[in-house]
Image (cartoon, rainbow, N blue to C red):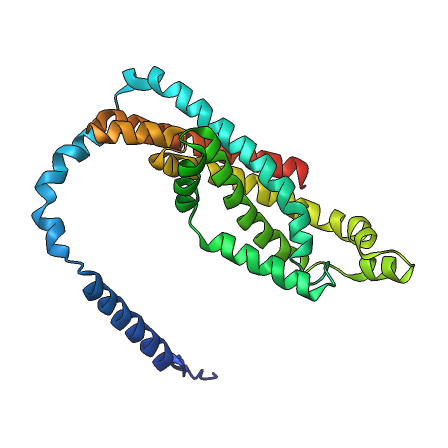
Length: 264
């Protein structure tokens, strides 16, 4: 009868590194909390004030629904228009922002630098500036969303371009084709599914973003949210939040179905 030797599981040799990383994260978090003056005690002290508002938020005023229909339609229209225009602008810019498809290094550097600046500015700030320029309403919101979309789509699609198979492109160039012709015939078909997927994802983001940028007067449900919140009508605010949730979930289902059909 053979005896089996049971080996004890060895402790990971790098366990101390995990402890050090967690300790550093904890120290940084505490330091940041002290820096911003975060006090958990404030939540406990003010909990009584929040109770009444929370009760109202879980009791939506469904009779308010007719007043929200126009704002919902405007939000969806803003999202669709901004996505379509933003995607159209982003497609050629994505090729200009990738080292695989753009051999002109100075132009590549300029495009990437501009896109970094575009992504660095929050969409709410774009909306606030555009409201001051073109006035309140859907137009300023659409323009803000277009800029927001271009920054996102160019970033994601250009990164996908950096990892495409360059074989067909090199073959087209070797056959005497120009860079533009090679990119159009050899690279664009490879990247189109990713482009469609990212555009649909941006459409979902636009619905959420429009609810935020409207707080500064850029149209959509955000303006209605600001009006309701100003008069402390939390029952009506609860309904709007519920509507946004339903719209986002429905849009996510539709975009997932579209991805399967278009991208495969």
